[in-house]
Image 1 (spheres, helix red, strand yellow):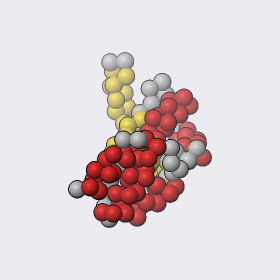
Image 2 (cartoon, one colour):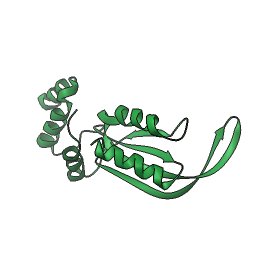
Image 3 (cartoon, one colour):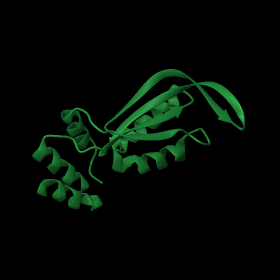
Image 4 (spheres, helix red, strand yellow):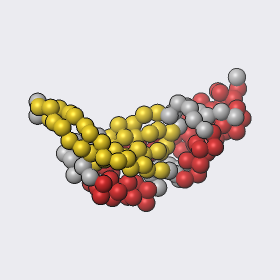
Amino acid sequence: MSCPLLVLSVSLYPGLRSIGVQLHSALTGSYAPGHHSLILINSPNEQAARDIGRAIMERRLAASVNILCRTSTMYYWKDEIQDASEILMLVKTKTSRIQQISDYVRSVHPYANPEVLSFLVEDGSLAYMKWMDEAIPDD
């Protein structure tokens, strides 16, 4: 009972959150849900996706960026259904980096309203999550 309380109290301080997560993982051998996130970002073409993805990586905001082949998309724009093809990026990061990534993408993206959607990672390979922590510097 004291371990979860310790992790909770450490997690209340933003600068110490990653220490709390690492402590939780070391003591329990399990993953602390919500420490990592997956972000979906759309792009009109592969070059824009590569440029955005590389800049995210160079800024050490993510552990990995996947750029998926052209996808078909339908969406409402100005009250009409639009059909388009886009490139989808999967950005794997710490939850604490979402706002920085979102702000950056909005500042350089060619779309007026780019898709930037994040999903909390609830569970996964502990070794992979540890690698992500090592790849992305603490806040």
